[in-house]
Each structure stands twice: as structure tokens, then as C-alpha cells.
Image (tube, rainbow, N blue to C red; front, side, top):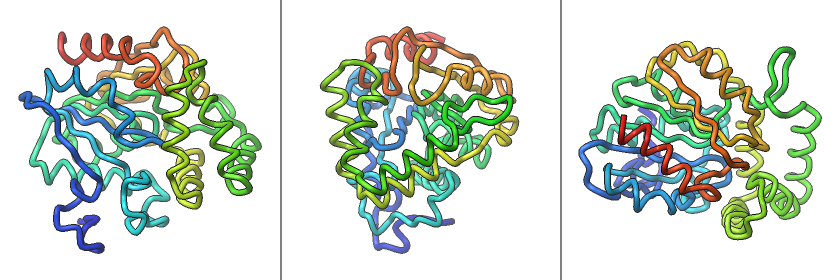
Length: 276
């Protein structure tokens, strides 16, 4: 088992290395996994409410500025499988099964991969703004052409600060200064070489072939206008996931509803996770 702390001396294991925290003492475990450019603080609007119903687990993905850069292995994390391995290790350390995972953006697919590897760890996957492939292909609208992706990589490489200034408001997708500032600050704290490495792992990924292997029930949640992921991707996933899957389109815009439409997102999560 590839455990982070074995190589770098973290006595507390993956949970400690990734700054794991637990809120609430509910009987069911709810795991919140953030996406690219963010860290666990992206959930700060949701945690106080969700902790009333669940034992809420949050952590930072290894690229986060809050995690030791020594832990970021470009080879391991060139694939989402590296992140999925970390997720499985973290849940094993907590000795939990049948968790509910809310995976945002890249963590949606990371959760799917982890559920294939260890289905007993999950009872429900909430895929928030997730996508199995970001590149367009004949018959598939991923949201980006190859030239657009290459332009992103070039901009990041040439002037990372300038790219952050452009990308953050685009991803937020609305005039929300607080949310845009939060995302900018999180992105700025990432090391540019790590940020570019992770961006390549995300934007060049293609996990469509694994969707039929996902047997855990899934709820796919997406903004009605997401600048990163077209709505058609949500329905593509619904058609190809092998377990029960449903789609909920939020009446909002942007890729980060947990920052910009958290009351609406909480209402939907309560409906699907608490009242079901």
C-alpha cells in the first residue's frame, strides 16, 4: 500500500499528512473532497450545517499549498489513481465504511476510481461539477478544444500570476468578489510547477471507460451554466454509470456553487442525503 507518510516521516499517516479534520459526531460519515486549485476551506459555508447531521471529514489534496511540497510526486499524481489511493488510505485509517462522498470537480472522478477499487467504502457518491474528460472529441462535448487547453498550459507556464487573475473569475462565473478572491488566493499559494502539473493531469485526463465500473449510487450535481463542464457531460455520466444515477441541475452559474450558491447547494444536499 502506497502510504504518504512512509516516505516522509508523517507519523499520523495520510490523514495527518493531508491535514484531515473531522466535524460533528453523526452516525454517518460524509467526506468532502475539493477540486483543482482549492483546499478544504472551500467547504467552509457548508460544514457548520452538514456537521449537524453527519460526521464530516475534510482534507487537502496533495497539491494544496497546505501540504508539504515534498509529498507531491509528479509521476504518481499524473493520474487520478494516485489521488484515489490517498483517499482509500485516508478512509482506511479512519476505519470507516459506507461513507457518503461529495467530490467536487476532479475529486468527482477520483471518488469514482476509489469506489471501483474499494466499493465497500462508499454508499453514495455526489459528483459536483465533475467530468470524465475535458477535451472535445467527435460525438463528445468536453468543453475545451485541444488548442484552448494548450493555450491554458502556455499561459500558466509563461505567467502563472496572470493566468490566476484570468482563470479565477472565469471559473467563479459571476460577479462575486468574495468567492473570486478566495479562489485567487488559493491558486496563488500553489507552487506554479505543481499547479501546471496538476492542470495537465486534469485537462488531459479521459476516464470515460471506467464509468460502467462504478456501481455505487451517484447523484450528479451541476450548475446550469458551468464554464468548465458543459451540462451534457452530466447526462453523459448518468447514461454510462452502472449504478443508480440521477442528475440535478442547480439554478445558478459557475464552477464553484459551494462558494457562490451554498444555500441552494445545501438545500439540494439535504433533500438527497438527509431526507431520502
